[in-house]
Image 1 (cartoon, rainbow, N blue to C red):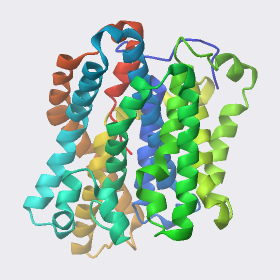
Image 2: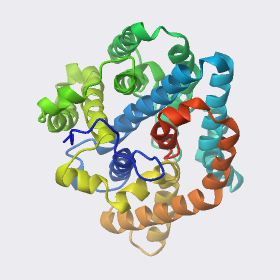
Image 3: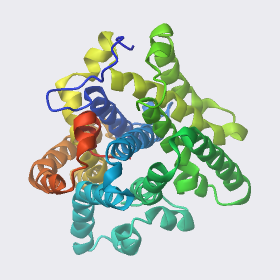
Length: 375
């Protein structure tokens, strides 16, 4: 629950501590769905994890852009947008292209079939046309959605009048709801899952939370502090959204997004009590730090572990816990190595594209960017 402070819970490096841990929880929700742990399928863990990532991305990216806009007006819109895109490419591209290159070179049919789509961040279009996500690299649809979001969202945040920003967020929600209902009725069901318009409401909700953190908008802290039941209610709403009747499923992503928006605002400000202690544990914070690598690499680690287990007569289908423990461990090792040897060295290049004055105003938002965006 909110601890009453008006300052974010940050560490000495300026990182939003509890948001890192939320990333870790989100990625392990995806792990559960991509494993054979059918006993836990009472909840759509992977869907919950992806939606949480989308809201987090909307929050972090909008906050960075708002800070840059408010504090660096003298730099001009084009220069600010250019710095943003440079930092995004430096952070996200190296591990993504590295794993694609490795599996394309070894001749993996799944990756080679959709190679051009993966390389151009249009995997979601490929899966929408083929109607099948059960391929190695199937999780790339979320990264494609994120990259497509990055193409147009900065221009809206940098150009749209701040006093009308809530209208932009509300319109995004209407577009998403309308698209999901239209897709469910008139198009392939896959469109309602993997296309950007179907997911824009989660990003917009994160953006709305970011707007509340600006000096020009009324902050939500007093509202939260008077109603401490809102955070657990938000989490419960996100969990229960999956149990809506089939006819109302297009509303479920919006409810999950709203619930996670409440949680993200509270975690950014600092949730107290035992939940806060859990979210500030060093293990969860580190897993959140490498969460982008965990998300990018984990299906490939799962595929490799499943192949080894079959060789020993231990198929993943009949030994799900063994498979889950081994591929999770391998994913953590791979993501840790990637962070230290690949991502961290590349991230140093971001120093050449600093936003300037925005750093001194709210360094936490720029530091949060370093945690990686996985979805």
